[in-house]
Length: 496
Ligand SMILES: [Zn+2]
Image 1 (spheres, protein in one colour):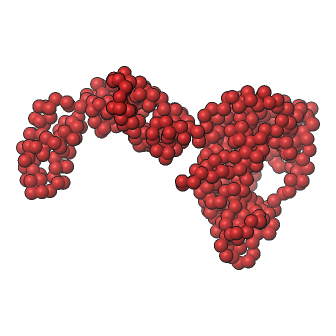
Image 2 (cartoon, rainbow, N blue to C red; image 1 turned 90 degrees about the vertical axis):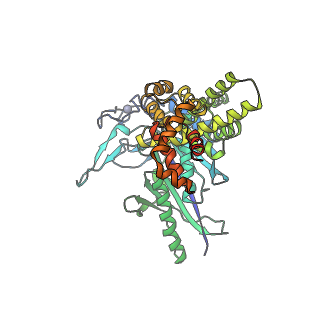
Image 3 (cartoon, helix red, strand yellow; image 1 turned 180 degrees about the horizontal axis):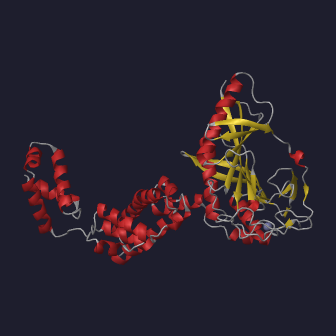
């Protein structure tokens, strides 16, 4: 029996507001002692009243608009009742039947194909506290600092077909949150959390069968692996004529690479939802929604398309460059600097366009290979990049005009990366300027030819490798300050 997979995701995104969802406690508990960033409201003390955080509502509206959701003019909060040690009030304030937004979409690119993934809903809720389980102990601790933190929950339609698609969707959503600047959406810090619903069905069958919910996936890779594991497990059940009949929740154990059954899934009515009596419902006028919409920045998908069309870079180059907003902006500003430079150098001509294209490609390559390598090696966040676009443009310009060769440029970039220095200053200080005086290069070439008789002989005997060796020797002699092309030309001429 040929089967197909149906996946839907449920995401929790922590909003980067100043204060918590319903009280004035700070929303930043990183580096704060456990149970110090709390107050009677987020602790649910009797007699306290919650107050809605307007900034959180605006963030949620912005996210809903970016996901092309229909915004509910009337929205309200509901109590979701359940008992758990991490829930101080004994209920969570969430939204049941009137979420902020519904019926949206997010476009993802899978290989060459653009896929539309439906967004069922987006709603606001407060986070619970964090349970800490000390290793080897038979008790758990509760840190309430996180209790009351604002979240948006985003639920996708079951439109995803493979673990890879789920990972792409998740990555795209993370990027979107970062572009909107409403969350850092860092999965490692728990600022983006993902649960998945997965079921199988015989191909050509259009019916939905019992789904399984998977929890506790803490990385992008974890999501992909957990789903692949679950596909394998459920496929075997189907092939054995025993597909899942009861809706269950399973927990992903990353170190073991398996999912284990945790419990039979609760129905919504198990939570005894009812409207939150302590909070006024939300009402959004059209004007207000328009106003929020005006704050929508250029989104990743639009930016990729624009860079591809406008600057003549390939779509996949645009994808790589837009993988963080910081780098995408950095690249664009570098190119703007270079364009201004070209314009100042010559009049409008075909040549100008060609030079610009070349400079754009050089920028792409220097940023996506050399700069990315430095970022990766140092594990530095692109947000903390010290190089400014003017200096990056200057470096590209120096390589383009043969003022320095590419190995010198790599050295310069490293210093710029570490200290934010001006490239011409680094070049001067380290005496890296390319030797342009031909007689000086010739002198060095003569010396190398004289000192490497064996290599010269094997070159003359037709061994091309010997030439590479000799070029290398010239580069070494001049500390890499000769253009290798010029050195090669001179060497071949001398050895004729
Ligand atoms: Zn509080």
